[in-house]
Image (spheres, rainbow, N blue to C red):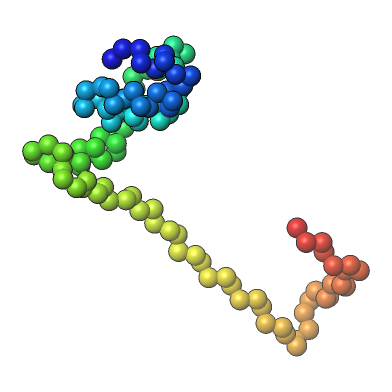
Length: 115
């Protein structure tokens, strides 16, 4: 819709010009302007069409009813990831008064440094 964005150093400073557009374009113009691009026709933007992810299509499809856009968005239930049940920590062995086949190791001269 013209070259309105050339009148300002960036699109955010041209926000007021959105009011001169037809009503149907004003909301989108304000959103675009708020991004603050340095020009309204960025030549360095590269894009390519990609397939739309199935979960996104499902989410967008849930926003519409038989008569068009739903009055309130229909929430898409979250995908819950089950948490694993932690295994109990085994209890340390109880000391014994019965002699063992292995001698008790000598204590280390200094404590082991913390990791």
